Image (cartoon, rainbow, N blue to C red; front, side, top):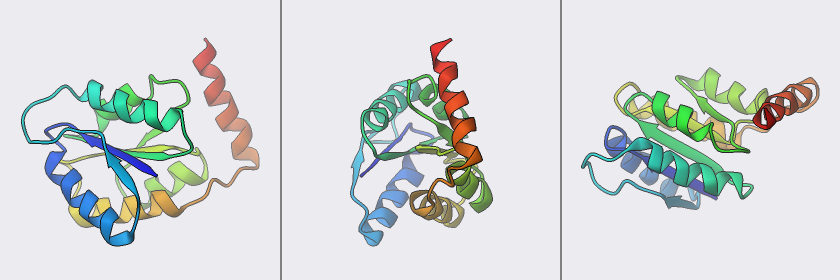
Length: 144
């Protein structure tokens, strides 16, 4: 299961990513927004992050740049949201950081790059090993 959300800045790209997920047979739930009308991105980030943190699912967040969504999502305990820009950052967000949400910008990311990142993010496993120790240290920061 994938939870996906965007604000108005990411709405158009989110709709295209939903089509891509459908083509790939990926089950998803759209957490909003549902039109290009202005909304507050922290509300959408919270909805997706809470779903991801309480499950074994992954998430996709899209705003104008991806920055606001990633900052907001990372405030939710259990979330490791990675702002990605290309295939490499999407791959290593999973392999080394065990990211459970990917964020990117609807105004900064082309459709083909976005589709490539989503596919890589959803299909790349966490490497574990030495990276597991580091991810554990990241998660311990939530207790400060």
